[in-house]
Every structure is written in structure tokens, then in C-alpha cells.
Length: 332
Image 1 (cartoon, rainbow, N blue to C red):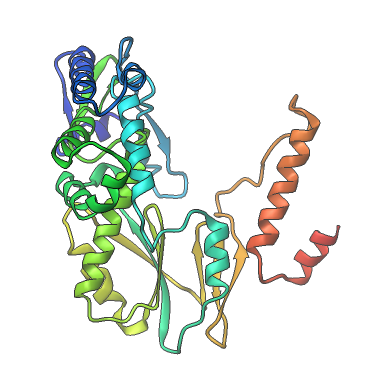
Image 2: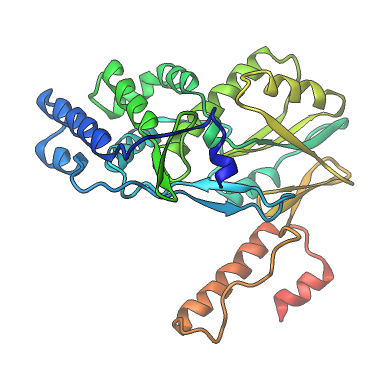
């Protein structure tokens, strides 16, 4: 974690705890909104911060990657801007419409199983490297500007003030680690309610910008947060990857290619059939332990049954290819 925090392009070490400063700035913005008649007294009370405490960062090891790199998480429930972040997130979630996004694996399964492509295409998956900590502020502004006609239908805050609040919430990202305080000066924190919708806006802008300039036919492109599933002409994969990586230096992609007509995506494997249609099969990463819930634990029996039932239901839903062994297991 200390090595991660030494990245001077992402984090800045602070001399003191900035909680009071950010709390005062947060409350001053809320008072402005109330004085302008943009929020009522009850909303203002909810958005004001009175007992904020510095969030504590922690790292989740990425067990499926070499050298166990950490995914930094900052749970911001105690931060002075938490309620304001949720307020903005609710507005943007109602406004942002990205035709390339999927809500869950079941939605993608239904889509891909009803799709076909012509010969000569290949499946690839693109993954954004550390998306949240690399969301450029200028692209957030650009995305909000481009989608303002939709956003303004869900708020009476004017554009300039809305952008001012968004920028404040992003720049007020801070945390403590081993009694030392840091401010995040690049991107947004995983754990901030505003981060997922900002990532949605930025990746949507990226896709639209790249596809408008790319002279390559891409029949299928779907994404879930920072994972992209794309069907591309087999001889154009490097061209498309270069176009995505050339959009902004902060947003860089890695690529995974299909092997023998199979490509893992989310918790399934997409299989390209001989007739160029698609099927899916349930997939777990090689590091998965296979454990869900100990039957001899003190959880209520109905919870144990529901966990098993929902797991089997999801596997059956995502597995449109069923081997003889799977059919036997389902029957058993």
C-alpha cells in the first residue's frame, strides 16, 4: 500500500487532516443551494456534514493477477462529502443513457445468445487499466456538457453550479493510512458513490469518440464498467486497440483474445459456434475456491437454501451449452 501511495501523479501527502476544511466547503455549497431555492430545508439538512471523520483506505488483493497488486478502496461513508456525492449520483444515474452498457451478466447472456456475425470476425475483451483512479477530470466535464440536455431534466441546478459541485466532490477525495493523510489528485476513489456513474459517462464518451473516427465495422460492442466485449474483423484488432489507447493517455486498455472460439467475459465463457452464432457457458476463474457458504454455519436454514438455489439458477441461466455432465448435475 505504501508503494501505491508513493505514486505522486495519483496521491498527494497532506500535512494535516483536511476533514474540517472539506466539511466547511461542503456545508457552504449546501447553503448556497438552499438560498437559491434549489433544494428544500429537509434536503439541506441531509446534505450537510457535522460529524465527518477521515475515511480509511484499504487494499483488496487482485488474486488473479501476478504479484498480487492491490485494488485501493476508500469507503467514504464517514467523509464530509458523502451525502452530496449520493445526491449528485442519483441525478446522474437517472440522466445517463449508454447504449453500450449492460446491467448484469444475465442481460448480456440474453443479448449475445440472440446475436450472429459474419465470417472473418474475432471476439476480444478490452479491460481499462485502473479505471477509477484514471478518470480524467476534463473528460468528466466534457461528458456532463455533452449530456446536459438529459441531466437538466432531473435537476434545477444550472450547469455552472452543477459542474462546480462535481469538481469539488472529486477534488475532496482524501483518506488516512497509518495516521498519515493523503489526497487523491487523479481520478476518483473506489468507494465514492459518484465514481461508478462518472466512469459510465467517461467510457461512454470514449466509445462514441473512437467509433466516430474509426473506419472499422464493429457489429457487437458491450461493456460492464471497465470490461468491454467486442466483435471485430480479425485483421483489425490491433487497429481498434490502438484507437482506444490513443483516445487519452490516462485511459489505457489491455486485450484478451479468444482461444479456440471461446472467450471469458464476466462470469461466463462466450462460445462462437460454426454457424457464427454465439452460446455461453458458466465460468469461474482458476483461482476460485468453489466455496459459497458453510452449511454448518449459524446462518438460518432458509438462507442456506436460497444461496444454493440462486447459484444453481444463475449457472443454468448462463449455460446455454450443457454437457452431459451438467445435465446430470442439474437433474441430481
